[in-house]
Image (cartoon, rainbow, N blue to C red; front, side, top):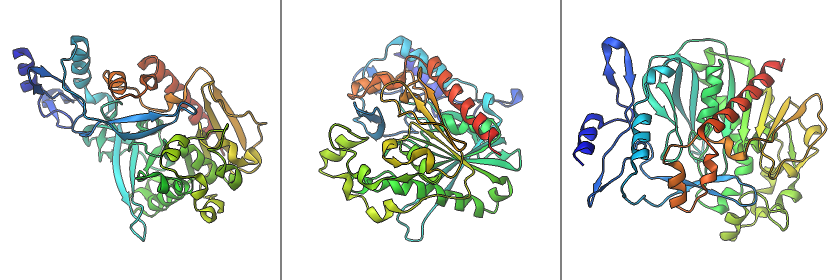
Length: 403
């Protein structure tokens, strides 16, 4: 225990505080905290980022995730291998990401009922180094908070990531990867619905959230001067992918959507809706029927979009170049004939789980302890990173090819 106390004293107050040697111009993040509880200890690098641990609930039918509250982890002895994995993760030098900046913008509507938090990732220098997007299960990305923008006339990608209750910045791997490629990547963090009765309207709220975010960036006195207004793109994953298709002009068939949770075609989140006795037909039918095409958006990418089957016409209804990325072989999306504006890219060796961050060393154990599915962490960090690289390369190539 004395060794643990010694380490704790050396690395306390990690998570976002700069330590290091100024002469070497090196900054290190140490995310290390000691707990003592009846003679046992637990190390948690992510606690100040996610003071309440969370978990993903998985649907056996569609494998999509919702980010919910998790029971507090019980303090227990940590195996030495996990201990040293956490130690190494906490001592990663931040200078490796010095060229990446991140900042936030709050967006409110007139009624003050649907606030949005935008996370902006961009080529930048300086700033206060932090582990953005990290939590107890998933790793984050080291970037300079409020760093100086190092490039002008950036193309912009708005990212709508995850399902109904995804955590903020759950698409950090995607936004950070796009920023490294020279984009301003804006993750649109929509408010999480508190119950199923309000969640049914998320299907039309999400594309509206993206359009409101476009408004906010174009009006911003600083960022509007740094962007290329002729190259505005959208990438969506899961329900965000549905929003991306709507923004490209895709039209939802109301009757098909209303029946999405009927047997045998169980749609996303159906078990959750049914547990609260909420039918999809409770959605605001007038709002759902409204077209959501945003002509400012040049092209879109939809990664494993939810409710793909309820789009009427699919490829014939879109009005902007559209790429659908189909992850995995289980519940693969229906194949369609490509057109000049619509194409699909299957990644059969990947999984829909690969739409999420890599896991922390303790991630699988945390999920298993709370009744979640450790499989969402994938076979290995290396395999997930390879999937991320392949998806990013496909997206970048698609956007680069759009005139």
